[in-house]
Image (tube, rainbow, N blue to C red; front, top):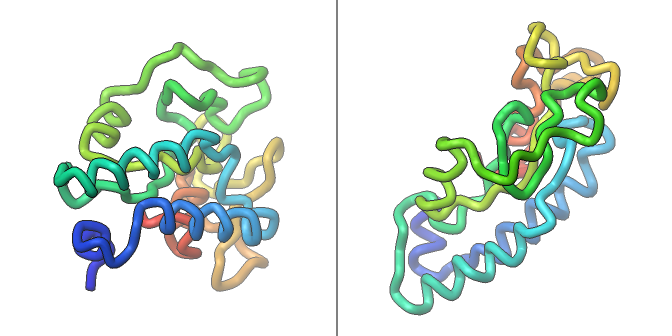
Length: 161
């Protein structure tokens, strides 16, 4: 059964998915360098999505789904570094990019920000500030692309999408 169907049917809760994802991040991120930051509000958001389900509110197939976001996209609850320490402490304008706003309205839960080639200006995800996102099937090579952290987060099931 697909995860969205399991969430909708109550076979799995958004809270369980977030707990599982955060546990995987904690155990795997040091090796793979997929995430630069995790969302401290993710569990609270999962609880809210669970309450919505219990009251009959279903936002669609992203409802309660834990997803990762490339650290180039502005989020209200996490700073954006673009994979660079030049942006000291990250940029936080206090609001979500339109993409993030739409994902949240659809019920998705942002787990955290993923690693990238600094300023997305390269094809290797070699990040000298935060570590290189490595290929989960061969950790002697990079994950590739400036979105390597996002790819690794999905491939290692540190998120669902």
